[in-house]
Structure formats: structure tokens, C-alpha cells
Length: 250
Image (cartoon, rainbow, N blue to C red; front, top):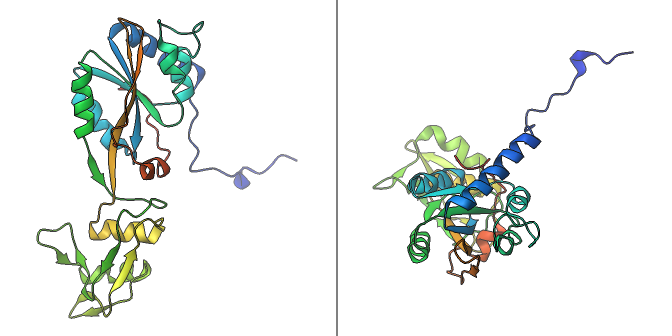
């Protein structure tokens, strides 16, 4: 007997997989750009946020091309062995493409690239599972929104949400108020969903989006230079990666 259509389960979180044709297109683009630009950089991201990566793309759109997608596809496009490499020496870079990394093609001089990415940082709100970068204690009294200038108390209609997230607040003259101080989070410990939401509500940004350069391939020599650690991507950043992935470059 055929199954009733009314009993069919539909997943609302299902994401369409990339087709073979789409992967081939990306591989072809990577190979074409490896022939167009002098340098190919491999980079990693700390505290990944698509919005900030789009900012980097925009700022470099006239002088570079950025790819951030499936590492296996990018590695295969460049070739991970001397026999498979698309251009001389590229396999030395390709074999390092693992995990959440991206590729940047550019003609910009290396020191300028290094200096730019060392300086680029974008503070953002932490998410569930991120490690608290500092201890936050809410003092007794009105619960304040720190992102306001000057800070201002929460409105009365948000008091139920604050209580739901773990604060023992009460309304005092229409203002959500703590009778005693509350330790919201402790430095070095993973954040719960409730803690992450509270930090965002009060305006406390605990993570920093950064891009760390790993290695650089030079098309004129075929050589790959490893980039010494700049301290851009911390161990905490690496452990807190979200698994977000952009499809590929614009």
C-alpha cells in the first residue's frame, strides 16, 4: 500500500548539495586565476563570520580574488602532488589546504598583504560554545545595555526575556533590576546558549574575526613560503570555528 502523502516528513533544514558541474566550475576558476595572478595565498579564519568575509572581499575586489569553499575541491583544483599540480610548485600549497581555509590570488606585494591582514580585525558577538574571553559580572541595579552611548537600562517589556535567560530580575519603577550582582560568564569557559544571548543583548562582543596568512606561492619561481605566525588566529579562535562556509568567490 503506498504511503500517504500527508504522512510525508519534510526537512526544513535540508541544504542542497553542490552538483558535480558546480564543483567543476569552481575548479576551473581556481586554475584560471592561478594563471592570471602572481601570488596565491592560503589563509585561515578565526571566529568565522560570513558578513566580515564579504567585507574583505569588497575591500580587495579590485586587486584580488578570494575563494572560500570546500577544501577538498580547492586542493584538487590546484593539485596535491607534483604530477597533478596545475602549475609548478602549487602542490606544496595545495597539500596544506585542510579544514576551514581560503585562497587569495593577487599581484599585491607580499609585505603589503601581510601588513593589511595583520591590521584587519572585526569584533563580534560570541556564539554558543565559544570560550569567554573575559569574566563579565552584572552589578546589582538596573540591567544596562552597554552598546548605548551612554549605557541605558533595558525597557520593561524585555524583563521576561531577561528572566528566561537566567537573570533574577524584577521591575523597579518599570526598569528590569538585579537585587544582587550576577556572574554572566567566566573567562576561559564555554558559553551556553543563554549566556551568548545575554552577552549580545547587553552589547558585549567577545570574539574577533581575523584572517591569518599560512603560506604564499609565487608563480614566477614556483616557490612556496610559509608565513611565520603573526598571532592573528589564536588557539581559542581555532577551537571556536563555527563551520560556516561561503559557497565561493563572487
